[in-house]
Image 1 (cartoon, rainbow, N blue to C red):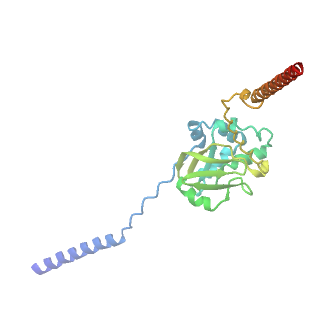
Image 2 (image 1 turned 180 degrees about the vertical axis):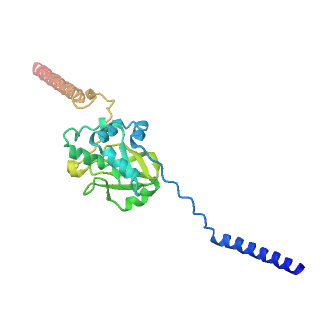
Length: 256
């Protein structure tokens, strides 16, 4: 009786171990947690809070370019980099004026302020070597970048300005403030040459302390006076000698 019991217990243990091993082998490996998707960036809210960028935001909403930027920011893998002029950049813009632009030209000008890819500020060193860089406006609407010891310059053909600050930079959206409105040559043509710097004003020569009366005219009368005085003395001396001779001659005639 003992042997059958041992056999039964051994069989049950073997079956238990087999089921445990089978469960271990067949259990699926847990899938890794999905990477967090980037948060939605509301560009309207961003431009409203930062800045002031009220004029730029007004033009974006007026032309509906804000929708193009928003779609590029949140519905593409590349992201977007936007260069935003402050309000005083628009108010200081006298020539050329934006008031004479057609609606299509104004839209292209605004699209010209964005690159269809996210760039960190540190990446502009590499970006400067690959200039010109295409913008969302497409075609010949390109920008040139230069890196001067960490100071990034943006050249649009008309405007050569610098990135003065980083407003927002988190993938997929980068917003950088620029000091001037980026004016494309495609719309405004070749920029007029800058006026040359004014010539330096020559230093005034020091005024002499010597009075003019002591030179030229002032010295001539003294020389003339001394000459005329010596001449009059010689004439007077000659007349006196002549009179003395006349008197002496008269005296001799009386004696004889």
